[in-house]
Image (tube, each protein chain N blue to C red):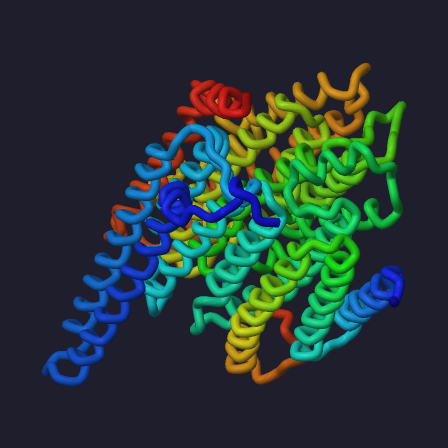
Amino acid sequence: MRSPASTMSYLELLKLALPEVIVVISALVVLAIGLTGRQRTAVAGVSSAKPPTKAAGTAAAATDWCSLAAALGVGIAIAAVLMLPRNASLFSGMLVITPLTSLFKIICLVLAFFTVCLARSEKSLRHPGEYLTIILLATVGLMLLVGSEELLMIFIGLELLGLSLYVMAAFDKTDVRSAEAGLKYFLFGSTSSAFTLFGISLIYGMSGSTGLAAISEKLVAAPAQPLLATGIIMTLIGFAFKIAAAPFHLWAPDAYQGAPIPSAAFIASGSKVASFVVLGKIVLVGFGPVHGSSAWHAMAAGWSPILAALAALSILIGNLVALAQTNVRRLLAYSAVAHAGYTLLGLVAGGRDGFSATLFYATVYAITLVGAFGVVAVVRSETGGDDVKNFSGLAARAPLLAGCMAIFMFSLAGIPPLAGFFGKFYLFSAALRAGGDHGLLWLVGLALFGSFVSLYYYLIVLKAIFVDQPSASAPPRDHVSSDLLQRRAVAALAGIVLLLGIMPDILAARILAAMS
Amino acid sequence: MVPLSYYLVLSGILFACGVLGFLIKRNIITIFMSIELMLNGVNLSFVAFAAQWHALSGQVFVFFVMVVAAAESAVGLAIIIAVYRTRQTLNVDQINLLKL
């Protein structure tokens, strides 16, 4: 086991894992600030003559300091990622640094930053310091997931992310639905990780190793065995839960609807991006030799027909069930199922083209969804609900937000010149080119059909915003909530979506270059 | 020496019991225990494979699984308490506010 090459060098480990270390330290700092703030609030509440205002003021100040510390930590971590060496690998792939992992660490950190912005404005969270700490710990999970090519590390990253997200989903103790969302997410999530783990154990048993590259070497030599097939299927089922692909999507609508909005945004964005990066690495690097084929005229056993079936089911179920939704968050959840289906197309196509298309789409989708949840958060805080009817008359009330929501919805539907269009374009063209003789045409046709269907329900939301009269319960026109930060974050996200639509190359070319 | 397949069959049975319990039981605590049973099935198969390959990595994996399972039960029980406080029930059929 022990060889000179694999002896530990803690200094090097610290150097290469610096971004993660910084995020952990800032999580602890945020926790400390939150705790001292709370103690001071308690003291002020007991001693001062006018407790409510002063206590509220102190609490708000503590929230601000916590958010500032969290944002600062994320910013420093991004700088640290930029200063990492281009290529490095520690402990046979446990911590890998390539241009691709660095790029996606930055993307995860940016998503965390916007989630912190949303969380800063969320009034229902009683302990913002603890909440922000958990967001940062989840971010560490994302970074570990992205930066590892070893199944043990991937498992630990998944669990760190998962456990943080369960807590985030159940965080709002005053809301009955938050606890329920957390419970459902927890039960499904931990079952899915048990499935992944069983799959990993069988793969370990067949290959004698947990490093993806070593597994791939073993798979080339060994013929297909039933145990190996079981292992691969189990692992894929576990990941299908994580990316909310049908028929393993049942937790997603409940989690998206019941969880506090920043949590839902983070579950939908960061967790999804990292899961797709890892899933891509596992199937394309680890299981590369047992690719199989999902072309309609040449089906061959392997992981690609399984992913193709998941993609087809997700596109159909997600889009058709979304048509019947009246709650915007639930609608976004079912559309997320459909989008998971589109995103899988790139992995089915395989190769550098397919993987980069998948990563581009997952990133664009994540940015769009954080923005959409930001708009939902504002509407919810103003009207007290997030059904489609709560959005009626938003255009008259807040033109900027309405415009941003239009950008997000059109991008999700894939209308040019928005980022979602190019994401879909790359995915579909990669799928058409792969598999020879247009073998994946059936899947692309299905995805196009799904996109047309999806236009209908996105337009229903936009109709409520731009055409419908405001309902009686809506706040008056001049009611402007004081929360500028949230609106600015939403506007910035809309700007990014627009920018990536006009110049998709600034991200797409970067992903492609990082992969070579 | 007991052959490898015996261990694998036992681990498969444990895992299947866990899945079955997850699907048919209605009490949250029982469901929670079913998940732990699945993890233990996994542990058994890891240890068996580690013995077969004469490699430590499988056993190391088991330690990590046990630690994670402990963390998971901490988080899980906390969520279950939160649910019980708001709904006064542990039956999953009655936890149904979020529906289509």
